[in-house]
Image 1: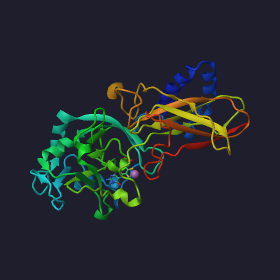
Image 2: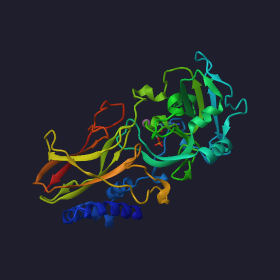
Image 3: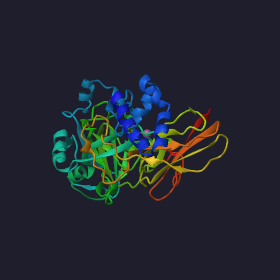
Image 4: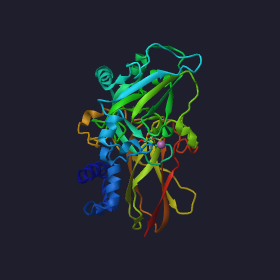
Length: 396
Ligand SMILES: Nc1nc2c(c(=O)[nH]1)N[C@H]1C(S)=C(S)[C@@H](COP(=O)(O)O)O[C@H]1N2
Ligand SMILES: [Mo]
Protein backbone atom coordinates (compact mmCIF):
# COMPACT_ATOMS: atom_id res chain seq x y z
CA UNK A 1 0.00 0.00 0.00
CA UNK A 2 2.80 2.38 0.99
CA UNK A 3 4.55 1.77 -2.33
CA UNK A 4 1.38 2.27 -4.35
CA UNK A 5 0.53 5.46 -2.60
CA UNK A 6 4.00 6.83 -3.34
CA UNK A 7 3.92 5.63 -6.93
CA UNK A 8 0.64 7.23 -7.79
CA UNK A 9 1.37 10.32 -5.82
CA UNK A 10 4.48 10.58 -7.98
CA UNK A 11 2.41 10.53 -11.17
CA UNK A 12 0.07 13.22 -9.90
CA UNK A 13 2.92 15.21 -8.36
CA UNK A 14 4.64 15.39 -11.75
CA UNK A 15 1.41 16.71 -13.21
CA UNK A 16 1.00 19.38 -10.58
CA UNK A 17 4.66 20.49 -10.64
CA UNK A 18 4.30 20.79 -14.42
CA UNK A 19 1.90 23.61 -13.68
CA UNK A 20 4.59 25.67 -11.93
CA UNK A 21 4.30 27.44 -8.59
CA UNK A 22 0.50 27.47 -8.54
CA UNK A 23 0.45 23.74 -9.18
CA UNK A 24 2.93 22.97 -6.41
CA UNK A 25 0.91 25.12 -4.01
CA UNK A 26 -2.22 23.25 -5.03
CA UNK A 27 -0.50 19.93 -4.49
CA UNK A 28 0.66 21.02 -1.05
CA UNK A 29 -2.87 22.11 -0.18
CA UNK A 30 -4.25 18.66 -1.00
CA UNK A 31 -5.57 17.64 2.42
CA UNK A 32 -4.95 13.97 1.70
CA UNK A 33 -1.24 14.68 2.03
CA UNK A 34 -1.69 14.84 5.77
CA UNK A 35 -2.91 11.28 5.53
CA UNK A 36 0.36 10.24 3.91
CA UNK A 37 1.80 10.03 7.39
CA UNK A 38 -1.41 8.94 9.07
CA UNK A 39 -2.31 6.09 6.70
CA UNK A 40 -5.69 7.74 6.57
CA UNK A 41 -8.17 5.07 5.40
CA UNK A 42 -9.82 7.44 2.95
CA UNK A 43 -6.49 8.25 1.40
CA UNK A 44 -5.55 4.61 1.28
CA UNK A 45 -8.78 3.85 -0.51
CA UNK A 46 -8.37 6.72 -2.96
CA UNK A 47 -4.79 5.78 -3.69
CA UNK A 48 -5.68 2.14 -4.19
CA UNK A 49 -8.16 3.23 -6.82
CA UNK A 50 -5.48 5.28 -8.54
CA UNK A 51 -3.73 2.10 -9.54
CA UNK A 52 -4.43 1.26 -13.18
CA UNK A 53 -4.72 -2.50 -12.59
CA UNK A 54 -6.45 -3.79 -9.47
CA UNK A 55 -4.50 -6.06 -7.11
CA UNK A 56 -6.28 -9.42 -7.15
CA UNK A 57 -6.53 -9.59 -3.36
CA UNK A 58 -8.56 -6.40 -3.38
CA UNK A 59 -11.30 -7.75 -5.64
CA UNK A 60 -14.58 -8.39 -3.89
CA UNK A 61 -15.77 -11.94 -4.51
CA UNK A 62 -19.33 -12.78 -5.50
CA UNK A 63 -21.67 -14.53 -7.89
CA UNK A 64 -25.08 -16.13 -8.01
CA UNK A 65 -25.64 -19.51 -6.38
CA UNK A 66 -26.33 -20.98 -3.01
CA UNK A 67 -23.62 -21.39 -1.97
CA UNK A 68 -21.96 -18.92 -4.35
CA UNK A 69 -19.20 -20.79 -6.20
CA UNK A 70 -16.56 -18.44 -4.80
CA UNK A 71 -17.02 -19.98 -1.35
CA UNK A 72 -16.17 -23.56 -2.43
CA UNK A 73 -13.23 -25.34 -0.80
CA UNK A 74 -10.31 -26.50 -2.96
CA UNK A 75 -11.75 -30.04 -2.90
CA UNK A 76 -15.17 -28.74 -3.93
CA UNK A 77 -13.66 -26.73 -6.78
CA UNK A 78 -12.02 -29.90 -8.01
CA UNK A 79 -15.25 -31.91 -7.74
CA UNK A 80 -17.17 -29.14 -9.54
CA UNK A 81 -14.81 -29.22 -12.53
CA UNK A 82 -13.32 -25.88 -11.58
CA UNK A 83 -9.63 -26.70 -11.45
CA UNK A 84 -7.40 -26.93 -14.53
CA UNK A 85 -7.24 -30.76 -14.22
CA UNK A 86 -11.03 -31.13 -13.97
CA UNK A 87 -12.30 -28.21 -16.05
CA UNK A 88 -14.36 -28.75 -19.19
CA UNK A 89 -16.33 -26.61 -21.61
CA UNK A 90 -19.31 -28.03 -23.47
CA UNK A 91 -20.41 -26.37 -26.73
CA UNK A 92 -23.52 -27.97 -28.14
CA UNK A 93 -26.23 -27.05 -30.66
CA UNK A 94 -29.75 -26.23 -29.54
CA UNK A 95 -31.54 -28.63 -31.86
CA UNK A 96 -34.97 -27.31 -30.85
CA UNK A 97 -34.19 -23.95 -32.46
CA UNK A 98 -35.34 -23.89 -36.07
CA UNK A 99 -34.02 -24.44 -38.67
CA UNK A 100 -31.74 -26.55 -36.48
CA UNK A 101 -28.07 -25.55 -36.16
CA UNK A 102 -25.78 -27.40 -38.54
CA UNK A 103 -22.96 -28.38 -36.20
CA UNK A 104 -20.96 -31.51 -37.04
CA UNK A 105 -18.81 -31.90 -33.91
CA UNK A 106 -20.49 -30.85 -30.70
CA UNK A 107 -18.13 -30.57 -27.75
CA UNK A 108 -19.83 -32.54 -24.98
CA UNK A 109 -18.83 -34.65 -22.04
CA UNK A 110 -21.23 -37.40 -23.14
CA UNK A 111 -19.32 -37.74 -26.44
CA UNK A 112 -15.96 -37.28 -24.75
CA UNK A 113 -15.30 -34.24 -26.94
CA UNK A 114 -15.71 -31.42 -24.40
CA UNK A 115 -12.89 -28.89 -24.45
CA UNK A 116 -10.45 -29.50 -21.60
CA UNK A 117 -7.64 -27.45 -20.12
CA UNK A 118 -4.97 -29.13 -22.20
CA UNK A 119 -6.79 -28.31 -25.47
CA UNK A 120 -7.32 -24.75 -24.29
CA UNK A 121 -3.60 -24.38 -23.56
CA UNK A 122 -2.83 -25.81 -27.00
CA UNK A 123 -5.02 -23.13 -28.58
CA UNK A 124 -3.33 -20.54 -26.36
CA UNK A 125 0.11 -21.40 -27.78
CA UNK A 126 -1.07 -20.16 -31.17
CA UNK A 127 -3.87 -17.69 -30.49
CA UNK A 128 -3.40 -16.10 -27.05
CA UNK A 129 -4.56 -12.50 -26.75
CA UNK A 130 -4.19 -10.06 -23.89
CA UNK A 131 -5.86 -6.75 -23.08
CA UNK A 132 -7.00 -4.70 -20.11
CA UNK A 133 -10.72 -4.66 -19.40
CA UNK A 134 -12.63 -2.70 -16.81
CA UNK A 135 -15.22 -4.87 -15.07
CA UNK A 136 -18.22 -2.63 -14.58
CA UNK A 137 -21.71 -3.59 -13.41
CA UNK A 138 -24.70 -1.97 -15.12
CA UNK A 139 -26.06 -0.94 -11.74
CA UNK A 140 -22.98 0.29 -9.89
CA UNK A 141 -21.36 3.70 -10.47
CA UNK A 142 -17.77 2.66 -9.73
CA UNK A 143 -16.23 -0.21 -11.69
CA UNK A 144 -15.37 -3.34 -9.68
CA UNK A 145 -11.86 -3.79 -11.05
CA UNK A 146 -9.56 -3.28 -14.03
CA UNK A 147 -7.42 -6.29 -14.89
CA UNK A 148 -5.11 -7.40 -17.66
CA UNK A 149 -6.83 -10.47 -19.11
CA UNK A 150 -5.22 -13.20 -21.17
CA UNK A 151 -7.08 -15.89 -23.08
CA UNK A 152 -8.06 -17.46 -26.37
CA UNK A 153 -10.49 -15.75 -28.75
CA UNK A 154 -13.76 -17.60 -28.31
CA UNK A 155 -14.13 -18.09 -32.09
CA UNK A 156 -11.25 -20.59 -32.06
CA UNK A 157 -13.39 -22.90 -29.91
CA UNK A 158 -16.60 -22.17 -31.82
CA UNK A 159 -14.91 -23.28 -35.07
CA UNK A 160 -13.85 -26.56 -33.45
CA UNK A 161 -17.54 -27.58 -33.50
CA UNK A 162 -17.60 -27.72 -37.31
CA UNK A 163 -20.32 -25.11 -37.36
CA UNK A 164 -21.78 -24.64 -40.86
CA UNK A 165 -25.15 -22.91 -40.76
CA UNK A 166 -28.19 -21.90 -38.75
CA UNK A 167 -26.61 -20.36 -35.66
CA UNK A 168 -27.44 -16.81 -34.70
CA UNK A 169 -26.65 -16.61 -30.99
CA UNK A 170 -24.51 -18.26 -28.35
CA UNK A 171 -25.86 -18.82 -24.83
CA UNK A 172 -23.45 -19.59 -22.02
CA UNK A 173 -23.33 -20.07 -18.27
CA UNK A 174 -21.04 -21.23 -15.53
CA UNK A 175 -21.09 -23.77 -12.74
CA UNK A 176 -23.97 -22.97 -10.38
CA UNK A 177 -25.89 -24.73 -7.63
CA UNK A 178 -28.82 -24.91 -7.47
CA UNK A 179 -29.62 -24.80 -11.20
CA UNK A 180 -32.41 -22.30 -10.57
CA UNK A 181 -29.72 -19.76 -9.63
CA UNK A 182 -27.98 -20.08 -13.00
CA UNK A 183 -26.69 -16.78 -14.37
CA UNK A 184 -26.86 -17.16 -18.14
CA UNK A 185 -25.70 -14.69 -20.74
CA UNK A 186 -25.49 -14.62 -24.53
CA UNK A 187 -23.90 -12.92 -27.51
CA UNK A 188 -24.78 -12.65 -31.18
CA UNK A 189 -22.52 -15.03 -33.12
CA UNK A 190 -21.16 -12.21 -35.25
CA UNK A 191 -19.65 -10.43 -32.22
CA UNK A 192 -17.69 -13.60 -31.52
CA UNK A 193 -16.53 -14.34 -35.07
CA UNK A 194 -15.38 -10.93 -36.30
CA UNK A 195 -14.27 -7.51 -35.08
CA UNK A 196 -14.06 -4.16 -36.74
CA UNK A 197 -10.36 -3.22 -36.96
CA UNK A 198 -9.20 -2.06 -33.54
CA UNK A 199 -12.06 -3.86 -31.76
CA UNK A 200 -11.12 -6.50 -29.17
CA UNK A 201 -12.12 -10.17 -29.45
CA UNK A 202 -14.42 -11.94 -26.98
CA UNK A 203 -12.10 -14.31 -25.12
CA UNK A 204 -12.03 -17.38 -22.95
CA UNK A 205 -9.77 -15.93 -20.27
CA UNK A 206 -7.47 -18.07 -18.13
CA UNK A 207 -5.19 -15.39 -16.66
CA UNK A 208 -5.81 -12.08 -14.92
CA UNK A 209 -2.91 -9.75 -14.07
CA UNK A 210 -0.55 -12.51 -15.27
CA UNK A 211 -1.89 -15.05 -12.71
CA UNK A 212 -4.01 -18.10 -13.48
CA UNK A 213 -7.60 -17.18 -12.60
CA UNK A 214 -8.29 -18.75 -9.21
CA UNK A 215 -11.50 -20.57 -8.29
CA UNK A 216 -12.75 -17.80 -6.01
CA UNK A 217 -12.17 -15.24 -8.79
CA UNK A 218 -14.25 -17.19 -11.34
CA UNK A 219 -11.60 -19.55 -12.72
CA UNK A 220 -10.15 -21.50 -14.16
CA UNK A 221 -11.91 -19.99 -17.22
CA UNK A 222 -14.03 -16.89 -17.48
CA UNK A 223 -15.54 -15.33 -20.57
CA UNK A 224 -14.55 -11.70 -21.20
CA UNK A 225 -16.85 -9.72 -23.50
CA UNK A 226 -15.10 -6.40 -24.16
CA UNK A 227 -17.31 -3.43 -24.89
CA UNK A 228 -20.14 -4.70 -22.71
CA UNK A 229 -21.01 -4.42 -19.05
CA UNK A 230 -19.71 -7.29 -16.96
CA UNK A 231 -22.99 -9.24 -16.87
CA UNK A 232 -21.83 -10.74 -20.19
CA UNK A 233 -18.49 -11.83 -18.68
CA UNK A 234 -19.49 -15.13 -17.11
CA UNK A 235 -17.31 -16.70 -14.42
CA UNK A 236 -16.74 -20.43 -13.79
CA UNK A 237 -17.64 -20.99 -17.47
CA UNK A 238 -18.57 -24.58 -18.43
CA UNK A 239 -21.50 -24.56 -20.87
CA UNK A 240 -22.24 -22.99 -24.24
CA UNK A 241 -25.17 -23.51 -26.56
CA UNK A 242 -25.17 -22.61 -30.24
CA UNK A 243 -28.72 -21.60 -31.01
CA UNK A 244 -30.66 -20.47 -34.04
CA UNK A 245 -32.92 -18.46 -31.77
CA UNK A 246 -32.37 -14.80 -32.60
CA UNK A 247 -33.48 -13.62 -29.15
CA UNK A 248 -31.43 -13.00 -26.07
CA UNK A 249 -32.61 -14.73 -22.91
CA UNK A 250 -30.00 -13.54 -20.42
CA UNK A 251 -30.76 -14.00 -16.70
CA UNK A 252 -29.80 -10.38 -16.13
CA UNK A 253 -32.71 -9.14 -18.27
CA UNK A 254 -35.04 -10.30 -15.51
CA UNK A 255 -34.19 -7.27 -13.37
CA UNK A 256 -35.02 -4.72 -16.10
CA UNK A 257 -31.37 -4.48 -17.14
CA UNK A 258 -30.60 -3.54 -20.73
CA UNK A 259 -28.35 -6.52 -21.38
CA UNK A 260 -27.28 -5.22 -24.81
CA UNK A 261 -26.00 -1.94 -23.41
CA UNK A 262 -22.39 -1.29 -24.35
CA UNK A 263 -19.89 0.24 -21.97
CA UNK A 264 -20.34 3.97 -21.38
CA UNK A 265 -17.73 6.65 -20.85
CA UNK A 266 -18.06 8.47 -17.52
CA UNK A 267 -15.95 10.27 -14.92
CA UNK A 268 -15.65 9.72 -11.15
CA UNK A 269 -13.87 11.55 -8.36
CA UNK A 270 -11.10 9.96 -6.30
CA UNK A 271 -9.52 12.69 -4.19
CA UNK A 272 -11.33 15.92 -3.51
CA UNK A 273 -11.21 18.05 -0.38
CA UNK A 274 -14.31 18.35 1.79
CA UNK A 275 -13.12 21.72 3.05
CA UNK A 276 -10.53 24.16 1.78
CA UNK A 277 -9.39 27.61 3.05
CA UNK A 278 -10.62 30.67 1.13
CA UNK A 279 -8.66 31.80 -1.93
CA UNK A 280 -6.49 28.67 -1.84
CA UNK A 281 -6.19 26.54 -4.97
CA UNK A 282 -6.47 22.83 -4.34
CA UNK A 283 -6.04 19.60 -6.22
CA UNK A 284 -8.70 17.16 -7.30
CA UNK A 285 -8.18 13.76 -8.93
CA UNK A 286 -10.36 11.06 -10.38
CA UNK A 287 -10.64 8.51 -13.12
CA UNK A 288 -12.79 7.95 -16.16
CA UNK A 289 -14.18 4.68 -17.38
CA UNK A 290 -13.59 4.63 -21.13
CA UNK A 291 -16.52 3.17 -23.02
CA UNK A 292 -17.24 2.42 -26.66
CA UNK A 293 -17.07 6.03 -27.78
CA UNK A 294 -13.68 6.70 -26.18
CA UNK A 295 -12.57 9.66 -24.11
CA UNK A 296 -11.55 13.06 -25.42
CA UNK A 297 -11.67 15.20 -22.29
CA UNK A 298 -12.59 15.29 -18.62
CA UNK A 299 -14.13 18.47 -17.23
CA UNK A 300 -15.02 19.72 -13.78
CA UNK A 301 -17.32 22.42 -12.56
CA UNK A 302 -17.57 24.16 -9.21
CA UNK A 303 -20.51 26.42 -8.33
CA UNK A 304 -22.36 27.69 -5.26
CA UNK A 305 -24.45 24.97 -3.61
CA UNK A 306 -28.09 25.27 -4.56
CA UNK A 307 -27.38 26.53 -8.07
CA UNK A 308 -28.12 24.23 -11.00
CA UNK A 309 -24.64 24.27 -12.50
CA UNK A 310 -21.63 26.32 -13.54
CA UNK A 311 -19.03 26.70 -16.21
CA UNK A 312 -17.24 23.48 -17.24
CA UNK A 313 -13.44 23.64 -17.23
CA UNK A 314 -10.94 21.11 -18.57
CA UNK A 315 -9.12 18.69 -16.29
CA UNK A 316 -5.97 16.91 -17.46
CA UNK A 317 -6.09 13.26 -18.43
CA UNK A 318 -2.93 11.73 -16.92
CA UNK A 319 -0.61 9.90 -19.30
CA UNK A 320 -0.19 6.13 -19.23
CA UNK A 321 1.51 5.15 -15.96
CA UNK A 322 5.07 3.86 -16.05
CA UNK A 323 4.04 0.81 -14.07
CA UNK A 324 0.63 -0.77 -14.32
CA UNK A 325 0.09 -1.88 -10.73
CA UNK A 326 -2.09 -4.83 -9.79
CA UNK A 327 0.96 -7.00 -9.21
CA UNK A 328 2.00 -6.79 -12.89
CA UNK A 329 5.67 -5.89 -12.80
CA UNK A 330 6.48 -5.82 -16.52
CA UNK A 331 6.10 -2.21 -17.75
CA UNK A 332 5.65 -3.61 -21.30
CA UNK A 333 2.79 -5.91 -20.22
CA UNK A 334 0.49 -3.33 -21.79
CA UNK A 335 1.62 -1.35 -24.82
CA UNK A 336 -1.20 1.03 -25.63
CA UNK A 337 -1.49 1.97 -29.29
CA UNK A 338 -3.33 5.06 -28.19
CA UNK A 339 -4.18 6.65 -24.87
CA UNK A 340 -6.60 6.55 -23.14
CA UNK A 341 -7.54 2.96 -23.96
CA UNK A 342 -11.12 2.02 -24.62
CA UNK A 343 -12.75 -0.45 -22.18
CA UNK A 344 -10.23 0.52 -19.51
CA UNK A 345 -9.79 3.51 -17.23
CA UNK A 346 -7.69 6.70 -17.26
CA UNK A 347 -6.85 8.95 -14.33
CA UNK A 348 -7.33 12.69 -14.40
CA UNK A 349 -6.37 15.65 -12.22
CA UNK A 350 -7.10 19.35 -11.99
CA UNK A 351 -6.39 22.36 -9.82
CA UNK A 352 -9.43 24.10 -8.43
CA UNK A 353 -8.95 27.87 -8.34
CA UNK A 354 -9.15 29.71 -5.01
CA UNK A 355 -12.75 30.45 -4.01
CA UNK A 356 -14.63 32.80 -1.71
CA UNK A 357 -15.94 31.32 1.56
CA UNK A 358 -19.18 29.41 1.14
CA UNK A 359 -20.70 26.07 0.24
CA UNK A 360 -20.10 24.69 -3.24
CA UNK A 361 -20.98 21.76 -5.44
CA UNK A 362 -18.22 20.09 -7.42
CA UNK A 363 -18.97 17.97 -10.50
CA UNK A 364 -16.98 16.09 -13.10
CA UNK A 365 -17.95 14.72 -16.51
CA UNK A 366 -16.45 13.25 -19.66
CA UNK A 367 -16.55 14.36 -23.28
CA UNK A 368 -16.35 11.32 -25.53
CA UNK A 369 -14.46 11.04 -28.82
CA UNK A 370 -17.61 12.08 -30.62
CA UNK A 371 -17.58 15.33 -28.65
CA UNK A 372 -20.66 14.34 -26.62
CA UNK A 373 -20.84 15.32 -22.96
CA UNK A 374 -21.85 12.85 -20.24
CA UNK A 375 -24.54 11.68 -19.48
CA UNK A 376 -25.45 11.80 -23.17
CA UNK A 377 -25.71 10.06 -25.56
CA UNK A 378 -27.23 7.26 -23.42
CA UNK A 379 -28.60 8.67 -20.17
CA UNK A 380 -31.27 6.01 -19.54
CA UNK A 381 -31.05 4.23 -16.19
CA UNK A 382 -30.54 0.45 -16.33
CA UNK A 383 -28.24 0.81 -19.35
CA UNK A 384 -25.19 1.55 -17.17
CA UNK A 385 -24.67 4.17 -14.45
CA UNK A 386 -23.34 7.42 -15.86
CA UNK A 387 -25.12 10.19 -13.96
CA UNK A 388 -22.81 13.15 -13.34
CA UNK A 389 -21.17 12.79 -9.92
CA UNK A 390 -21.66 15.71 -7.52
CA UNK A 391 -19.77 16.24 -4.27
CA UNK A 392 -19.88 19.01 -1.70
CA UNK A 393 -17.07 21.47 -0.99
CA UNK A 394 -16.96 23.92 1.93
CA UNK A 395 -14.65 26.92 1.56
CA UNK A 396 -13.80 28.33 5.01
N1 LIG B 1 -21.07 -17.24 -13.08
C1 LIG B 1 -21.37 -15.97 -12.88
N2 LIG B 1 -20.79 -15.02 -13.64
C2 LIG B 1 -21.09 -13.71 -13.45
C3 LIG B 1 -22.05 -13.32 -12.49
C4 LIG B 1 -22.65 -14.33 -11.69
O1 LIG B 1 -23.47 -14.07 -10.79
N3 LIG B 1 -22.28 -15.64 -11.90
N4 LIG B 1 -22.37 -11.98 -12.33
C5 LIG B 1 -22.09 -11.11 -13.48
C6 LIG B 1 -22.24 -9.68 -13.16
S1 LIG B 1 -23.80 -9.05 -13.11
C7 LIG B 1 -21.16 -8.88 -12.93
S2 LIG B 1 -21.35 -7.22 -12.68
C8 LIG B 1 -19.78 -9.43 -12.96
C9 LIG B 1 -18.98 -9.08 -11.72
O2 LIG B 1 -17.67 -9.48 -11.92
P1 LIG B 1 -16.66 -9.67 -10.71
O3 LIG B 1 -17.24 -10.68 -9.80
O4 LIG B 1 -15.36 -10.08 -11.33
O5 LIG B 1 -16.54 -8.33 -10.03
O6 LIG B 1 -19.75 -10.84 -13.12
C10 LIG B 1 -20.69 -11.37 -14.03
N5 LIG B 1 -20.46 -12.77 -14.22
MO1 LIG C 1 -23.70 -6.78 -12.61
